[in-house]
Every structure is written in structure tokens, then in C-alpha cells.
Length: 192
Length: 192
Image (cartoon, rainbow over all chains, first blue to last red; front, side, top):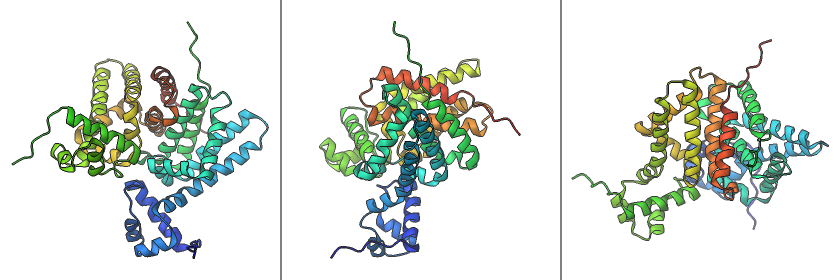
């Protein structure tokens, strides 16, 4: 008999919340189902009843972010102009990382999460389209490097504990400004 | 009797090399001493004879980078002008992350490494002084956010597997240009 799918609800949210905190502190690899169960105050079997595996929990923890990115992409793709699409994608991403500051610790710092995103066809499609939108049609090395700096830099800054005292509005304004600088075309050196 | 300090040598380097590869793939938490021993092709006891713990190995893996940063700081601190000091620190850091591209995977993506750096007084002093040099004397929120975006963005881009086909020289040039943009003063919005 197939294992029942856990209904959405309080117990499920408590597991995801505990997992997010532990992932941020210990990484996905450093967190066990037992640690998650202990933090929620239930048995490991109770956690296992709701989720098939630790990886399954990690996928659910990052799902809201991926769904946010998918929504931003739909908004961007509906616009006629490539520069407009790009501007919307940048602005939407910055808004998203600031809103999910706590989650960004997990999302932009854990090789296990990168591997999970790559393993999930839906997540992979979303991040692939985002890359296309932001790198531009040329996809030359400089565009690709700028995209990488933008993703890691902006994503991790939102989660940086050193910046925890800065309020969301100030963080949002500064990250948007920095994103514009990072992703504006880099001047090519003239050939000798 | 105190445990002997492992001499520098081939066996030691092989352990560090194996550990770096495994840390990059599985994170520090996801790597065991047994995995390191298996990769080198020796017993766990042989690894344990050279290093007290996995954390001790991780500290030695990142030590060359910290020593590089310390050297850049000494060069910068010898200059009379604050803007010059800052320019040298930026240029030195970019050179360093490009030279240690493989190591940057570990250095800029693992919460366990962040914790280790914080736990070591010498490493902590180096990263603290670097922060002072790059954030500038004002240390207003915008400077602090730009510093965070620079460290994560540039550090992780150097290690991004998506950019592995780009040669060191092109990567160096683009990262230096992007660093200058990120760390140049952000225009403050005029007060209403």
C-alpha cells in the first residue's frame, strides 16, 4: 500500500520550521531526522510518518522559494521586452530573498541543497529559466560570471547573520541597487 | 604524553587534498574521517595519527587562504592612504579566490567552515581586519551590505561549477570589475 501523503497542517509546519532552523545551523548533511524529531518534541517515527526522508523535508523547506521564483518568471515572461523581463526578474528575486531572509541561510549556502535542486525536474526548470532571463541572450563568459556573483552575493547577504540588525526595507533598497550594478553590461576590454 | 604534531609531507598533503575534495562535495558535516581515509587508501587510525579531528583537518585545508589574506592585509596596511588600502585589499582578495578556485567551494559555502573560522582567534582577527578595510570607516548599513555581497558573490563565483570552463584570466578580470562596482559608494536616497 502506498504511504499516505502527509496533509498540510500544524504538525507538518512544525517539522518544516524545526528542520529549517537545524539546516541553517548544521547544514542538511549535519542534521538528522532524530535531531528534527527532538526539536519538535515528537518521536522519529512521527516525523517519518509525515516525510519519506530528510531530503523530502529539505525539498519542502525550499519549495515556497522555488514557487516564488516560478511566479516571478511567469510575470517576467508575459512582458514583451527583454530588458523589461530582466528588470522584473531582478526585482522579483531581490524581493523574494529579503522576504525569506531566514530561509536564504539554507538556500544559498548548502551544497546538499544545490544537489537537491538539480535532482528535481520542476525546480531545475525554474532555476534554468531564471538563469536564461538574467544572463541575457548572449551568455558570454562575463554575463555568466555576473549572474553567479548576483545569485550568491545577493542571496547570501540576505541571510548574513552580520546583517541581522538591518531592517528589511533598507536591505531591500541596497540589494536592489547592488543587483543593478552587478548585472549591468560589463565593458569589454578593447583588443590590442 | 602529548600527541606528536604531524610533520609536513606527502602523506599529510594527501589527506588534506582528499579532505578538500570530499568537503566540496559533501560539506564538512557530511564528510567523515573514514571517508577521508578511504579516499587516501589508508586506515582511519593513520589519518587520526596526523590530525586530531575532522575539524583540525578543515582548519588546515583553509589555512593557506587565511595566510594569503593576512599577507594582503599586511601589504594594504603599509600604504598611507585609505583608498589605496582598500583597492589593494580588493585586488588581493580577487587574485586569491581565483588562484584557490577549488578551495573556494569549501570556503564560501559551508556553515561548518564559518563556525570554524569564528572559533579560531588568528583566523578571526584576519577576517575582522579585512572587513574593516573593505567596509570603510563609516560602516553604515549600505557599506556592510556591499561587503557581504562582495565576499559571498565573488568568493562563490570563483568556485561555481557552472563557470569551470572559464579560464583564470577572464574570471580574474570580470571579478575585479564586478568587485569595483559592488564596493564603490552607493548613492544614498535623498530624504523627503
